[in-house]
Image 1 (cartoon, helix red, strand yellow):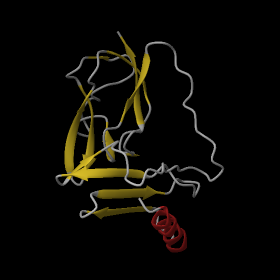
Image 2 (image 1 turned 135 degrees about the horizontal axis):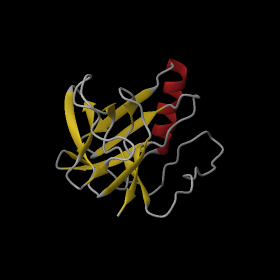
Image 3 (image 1 turned 90 degrees about the horizontal axis):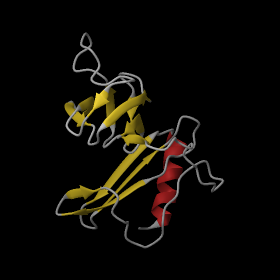
Length: 164
């Protein structure tokens, strides 16, 4: 991964007031996704290796140098401390969060709801496709962290779940 390329992309974003940029290089098998935060700072870049045309989230970028995002001071951002047995359920994709299957229907999961591995807890719309998201764990919803209709990022916490 060429860090000069990343720096140049950030400069382009700043000058053009671009909030999000994604570039794919199929030959190198690399995808870079940059997004500016609401305060003008940058979220951590998403860099993935692609194998056989499919993205592999979390795969290391070539070049060996880790990328870091944030407000420029280099400080690590720590998650708030959670009670034992409370887990964050993270968004598996970028899209729009929907708590229910339709505007007039009840929410899939609310505070106090019991969920199991196969329970649908929300829908995330991505590119006009409605993706049902399952809990993949058993427990109780302690808190819903996003509002209905809110855009969400890959890896963003959506729910707090007290696991059994």
